[in-house]
Image 1 (cartoon, one colour):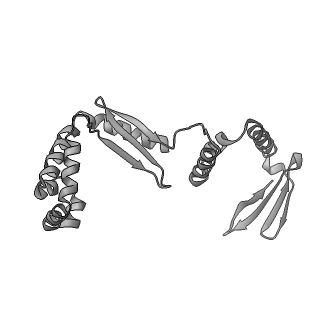
Image 2 (cartoon, rainbow, N blue to C red):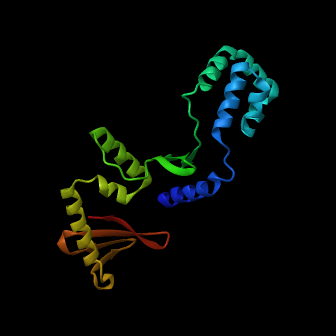
Image 3 (tube, rainbow, N blue to C red):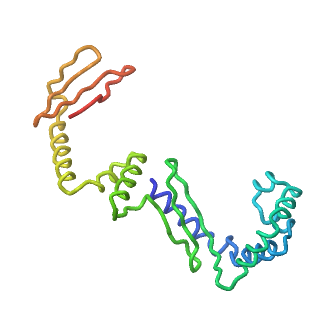
Length: 205
């Protein structure tokens, strides 16, 4: 679903890139000119609706007047020939992960996304990826972080569980009240309990 969301964002930007997204160079030049001259009204006009509501025209003018020197230096820096403006889009997922895309040569490009597989180059990076996999409850991401031997052993255990559960009606289920235990081949055991009228898996080993 995460990769589909990124793909949808790419598709959306592809359709919008040549139609509704203005040239960021014009915005850069306009901001540089307004900042260098301390034009509060021009800077207010460039703000988002949320920022306008928060500051108001008078508040924007006061903020520009208070930071006149800093804005002037920033405007001169932005007006330099070596400065390049670009359009970015950020997609934030429910778990806090962020995918960043930019318009490059008229097309959206993926610049950063933790959702895509990446090889850890340090132990700290591996631990960070482990945290992200656990936060997303992502089994594929977790499996990718395991060593070959650990992954192979886990796959063997899971394969045995799948095989032993192929005929659940034929298994010997020991029921005691709202709890049940099933002994499987290979030393595996599944514990179940009844929760609000439905049987759920409580533990398996």
